[in-house]
Image 1 (tube, helix red, strand yellow):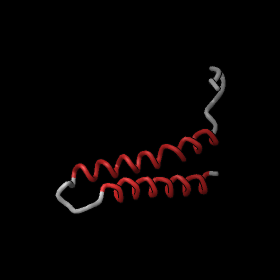
Image 2 (cartoon, helix red, strand yellow):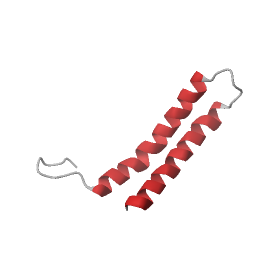
Image 3 (cartoon, rainbow, N blue to C red):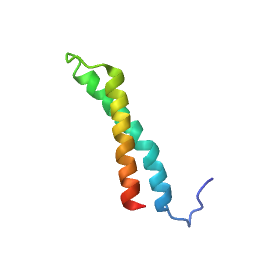
Image 4 (cartoon, one colour):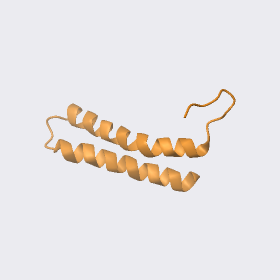
Length: 67
C-alpha cells in the first residue's frame, strides 16, 4: 500500500515498524559485538540471539508505553 502525498505517518505504523526493526538492530549489534571482541570467549549464537531478544523486549516496552 503506497501512501498518497497528503497522508501522514500514523503512530500504529511506527509501532509496527519498531516491532520488526529493533530485534534486527539488536541482532546486528550482537554481530558487531562478536566481531569487535573476538578474543573473548562468547558464542556468536548467544550474542546475536540475545541482542535480538533484547531488541524485541525493548520494542514491546515501547509499544506498551506508547500504545
